[in-house]
Length: 386
Image (cartoon, rainbow, N blue to C red):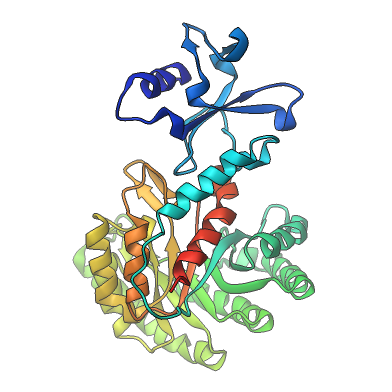
């Protein structure tokens, strides 16, 4: 269904849907955010180019910005950028925001654990590399909304050419963090090809002192990337051997500063190491400062198979990146109705395991940023529920 009219017709006539669980958000000039929200059940009639609500008011379909499922908080129809914030932020619709929260919380109602978890929960916060000065505002927002964050320098690649620019950024970030007391529990550097010894050495020389200064004890990187022309089994074996040698060589610097260095799982075959079990075997041959960052959007299979993988390797997992996935999308809200993974079941499994590390919510920033705070609150409630 690619247009709003088809979606409303589906909700109205298909008995598999409860129309009362959906809201229609449309442009209403002069209202807060120039938007109005109604329950989809308030639509009285659907015509060719408009729909009718109370007092025979006609609303053209082109004014609809989003149709949202209240139980998941996800927009099943989006025009342009949709409405990237909870419904309570539209004046007069606080009750729909509360309905959304209660529906989300129902996903987390069951918990079989009888002990208080020491698992900590936070959210991803990206450093604005294209506009560093805006980090002051972003850091204050991170404190008020999340408390604990994983800070990402997404574009940093470790190349010598960019080093002076990033040294300036890092010095600035350090001053802002110290001035705001932002709790950075992990540093995410996804764009470094760690097979390159020069780059990984440069990265550690740049970011280990930064971590020490802001009292951060975790660095997360993505696996190495093989060139397309060098992806045979022999090439992979040689690359893994070379990478182990590199990581052993720099492990002393990590140990001295008490920093855990985690590799994030990736299923792609051009990654070194690739996949969950390959990652586990690779990490098991390295000093204890090397661990795994388990990203659910980078997994394959259903909920049960993902939980089986966690149980096999949990002693090597330092942190989880929480987000849902489907066939066409990664890093979706964990309770998305389109998501393939059951996070109520996953949360129970993690609480029942020996895991006592960090969970970071990582959503697509432009599309789901405004859902992070609410989902983080419910996640914390679920994790610490006895």
